[in-house]
Image (cartoon, rainbow, N blue to C red):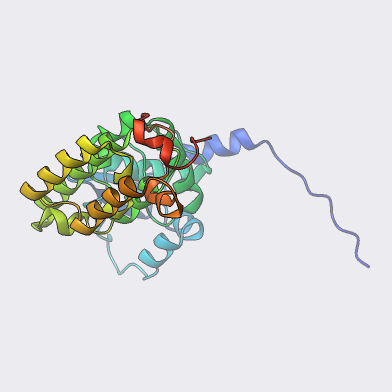
Length: 253
């Protein structure tokens, strides 16, 4: 039986520092990206991206033709977010800022860290441009989270702002843009007066399906029972107390 050889581990910090120095570095770079509305040029290295991320493996799978290859254009991805993703791919760590949190490219571990960051800095993040530029698939795990440190009334306003921006960019109705995510809003947490005001605003500018508002009123009417204890009635970490909450589920722990 062959004796296993000795495994030697070097220090992680110098290795990470060396790789971080290659982020957006034209030295030995063999692929360029043009990122965001500002069309910022970003340099990277094909083999590293492809071995670290399936998205880039598919994107970069074709062999470059003769001559200087053209850049890969990612106009819908904010430059700050893209650079944060590159830093994570190169070093397995990234410093997240409120304006550069990235939930993209199918990176599960990075997505989890980003969601945790937003949960801890919910109110600040909701006011950033980066939040308004999130895709619907990126927004969904946030709206499903019980740990957001924000009240539902503020979350409804943020969702409306997000949908308005998307509607302007995509030239589609606000309600159509909001449809993939708006079901995750927990309208039953709103007080009756707030729900009435939301219903009136929804008549002027449709955002939320009428049947979803009806379900929220149903939670108010039932007050007790299983119908008033599902996810639409479950409080988040930042939910402000309201009188009717005593009829819903247990306080958030």
